[in-house]
Amino acid sequence: MQSDIELIALSRQGNMLAFRQLVQKHEAQIRSTVLGMLGDTSEIEDVTQEVFIRFYRSLDKFREEAALSTYLTRIAINLSLNEIKKRKRKKNWLSSIQKNNSPRDLIDHSTDPGRAEMKDLLRRALNTLETDFRVVVVLRLIDGYSVKETAEILNLPVGTVASRLARAQKKLKTILNNWM
Amino acid sequence: MNEKALNLLIYSLDNQLTPLEQEELDQYLASSEALREEKEALLEMRAGLASLRREANENFADQLIRKIQSGKVEKPVQNFQLAVVKLFPKVAAACVIAMVLTVLGTFYVEGNLSLEAFIGVQDLSPEDAYSLLDY
Image 1: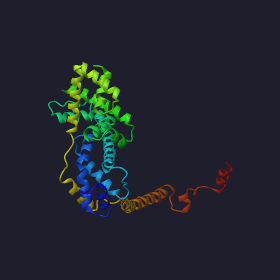
Image 2: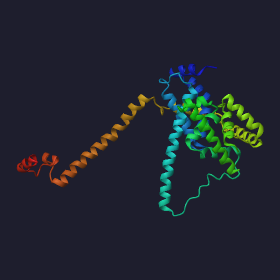
Image 3: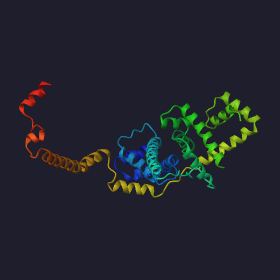
Image 4: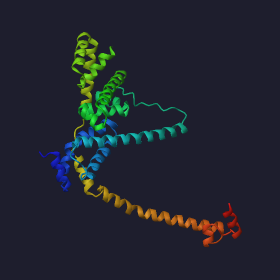
């Protein structure tokens, strides 16, 4: 099996089979990252695709100093954060319209998982975390990066990542205990 | 539960303890049933999170390659040139509309389309111009 560096070199020469192999090699991990950040929504496919499109566009500029998976994960995190910002704006806009049009408060059922399965519960709990905490959980506990690698991807000190990870786990545990 | 012990426990799961801290945690674990249960629960939660990792979508790579080959995805330079070319008709149309509105507006206000009317000095006498300069 060819290494990422060899496949990138071939892709730069226009070899789409090599690029296809790169995509197949990293797609599951990138999909997991995006899914962890955004939850199970319709945007996952688009964001995952956009990650690889951006990589394809910057093939010539990509320097092999960083591992490809780290590079792609960074793009995936940035695009997911953009998507979360977009969602927030949309939510704020919608809630302002709903406030103006309807005197009743809307009840949010999204935090009441009922009899959902464990995976679903975990996903929902993960989505209630602030993005700073969610991102470390996704990288460390779902994608399986070490604390040091997570710190490199996020450009944060190792101590900050370890501390956020600890706090995130406490929060998740509290949320899950309340639901179960 | 002892907050310090809990923190040591959580940090230990990511190998973030010094040997001394690890020793301290081992002592807490040996003496606390609740902490041992907490450790099991945390490990279970972490295993659950690890299981959220997705499998690859078999069609994904093919769909992506098709999209790239269909020409919908351009390299940045081509993309920028294309954007400029695509934008040109819109910019030209906006300029034409602005010019027409200016002509119509001038004619409506001034009643003619002379150069003086356009630059707004049609009703200005030389004395006015002099007094303006005086200010």
